[in-house]
Amino acid sequence: MKKVLFALAGILLTIGVAQAQEDGAKLAKSAGKALAAYNQDPSGNGSKLTEAITKIEQALQTPEAQALASAWIIKGDVYSTRLTNELTMKSINPAAKLSGDNDALEAINAYKMAIEIPTAKKYEKEQAIDGITAMQPQVVNIGVGKYNNKEFDKAFLAFKASIDAHNVLKANKKKSILDDAKEYNDQVYFTGLLATLAKRYNDALPFYEELYNKGTDSVAVYEGLYNCRTELKDEAGALKVLQEGRKKFPDEGSLLFAEINYYLGKGKLNELTGSLEQAIRKEPNNPGLYRVLGDVYNNLFTTILEDTTQAREQRAPKLKEYGDLAKKNYKMAIEKDPTNVDFNYSLGALLYNETNILAQEMNATSFSTSAGQKRYQELKAQMLVGVDEALKYFQKAESLDHNDQNVLAALLQAYGRKEDDTLYMEFKKRLDVVKKGGKNPAPYFKN
Image 1 (spheres, rainbow, N blue to C red):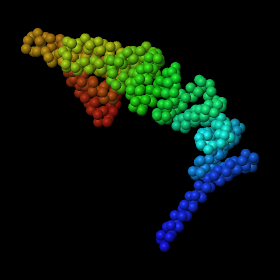
Image 2 (image 1 turned 90 degrees about the vertical axis):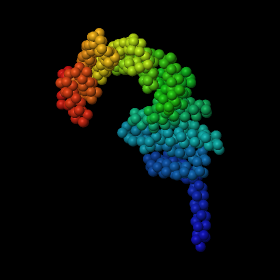
Image 3 (image 1 turned 135 degrees about the vertical axis):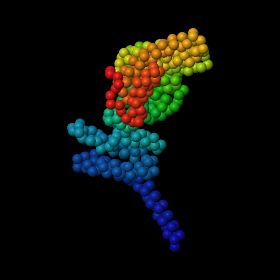
Image 4 (image 1 turned 180 degrees about the horizontal axis):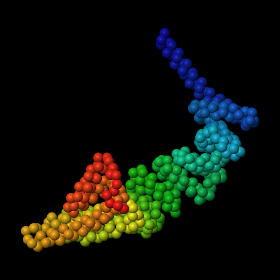
């Protein structure tokens, strides 16, 4: 008995599926009739448009309706009709809301599906093309609205649809709102930009690459392509575009700063200096650039200082060169922004590190002779002069931020080297407060 019931249930299920598939075409036709009724009397048959939307969506859930160009055209017409009517109402009442999120996009995608159906008749294709022509400007307008609302993903889909529509119209020798070459290229660029803003980097690439392959004169295309390839971890491709862009647009700041960031990320300090100096020529009042260039020279200085494979005498010329250049740029940064804690701390740290060179020589000096003892005292005096010079900037930094842990540690170390027990203990206490999560109530040094 159970076997009979299971077999019967299977037969009923099969019949039910077949009936649903068979109803797809009927539902599509019914949706078309409801739309026609609405169009005959929009004010009296308002509910017919809602009925048409419901039925065509149900119909297109079935394989049978999906295979009919007419069904997709009905969907396109339904959403196109709703959007057109609601835009008319919005022109009268700007506060009126649109029912759909993007009816123009829904319509264009439906019309495209109709054209792609292998059995679509000539007149059906013409209807679909006419629908795309009508909706192309609307999908652009809605895309702009989505962008203004920072809905970048939706804005991208809308702009992409406008380009897809253009390609369909051109393939069928019809006019498009993007027939002007400049307007088309601008739309391609903005579509790539919107994909980038939506973090859809793979989707953005084809749009940037289309313009790049045309030999674009837009630095923004190179920048967009570089950023996408970087995000997609295509380092070789990103560097190629960056190098080409820098050669083609040598004075453009966006690619220059991209190059600086690339070299910073790779730790290519020697390559950085030229790019930073060029950036400073472009923005001579930007203190951050002087600070970064100072950091580069400071890192080069530190690398040589810590290089024990060379004798001190061999390293001395480069140490002086890089140290002087670092100080010059840090001082320029402070001149542009005197109250910046980091700038003052960085210069103080460099000056203090220079005293380490003298400290190394002191440690290597022999006390076994009076000449050695004399040399030691000379070196110590020079070292303390350097420490005092560094302290000027550490003290300034502390007056600006009396709870900066790096600044307090630097003051502690400097006063330790000066053998100033009073101030050493003062800054040890202050540093301990900060390390324990507390705050010192006031700076020790006055600004």
